[in-house]
Image (cartoon, rainbow, N blue to C red; front, side, top):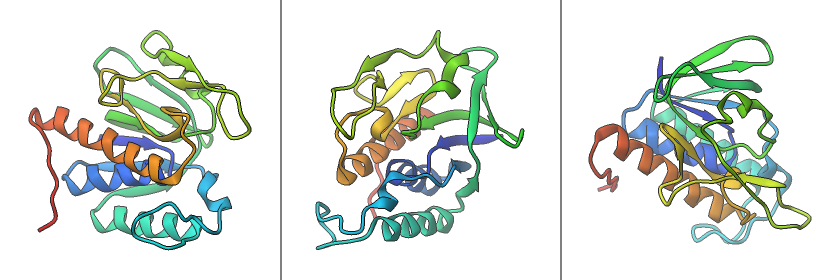
Length: 191
């Protein structure tokens, strides 16, 4: 049983995983390898870099997750379900493997068919029209919560198609998840 299961290994999912793993939560990221940012060779909207390739961000993020004892599994999630709310989740993959967790962060831009068993818990909102937008997003509260122990980050949550926004949204979802888990405001400052 994991504390946190993150669906999606792009910048939002990896940033969330860094926070949850560093906070001591048993974290697993399920990543199908189809991360959108890998297609970008010169990201220029980040404070810390003049220009950086998407592949470099992903590889650095994966290393950071593993430094904090988070796990990254190559897997395509086909179904996310749970028996009772707020009970644990089961994620089933294409290869029929399953992963259990107490909480989940949805950070995928690959559609939401896998969430059909949770349709009575999750609401969607229409996305704006445009070349790089999704038809719909998962509706969340101000803390990136869609339902009990369901958090959402990146393009699953917002239409802003920017790496910096996705990184921040992943961090926000994770901080709120950790705060809820610890039942107190979670603040992570590196000293």
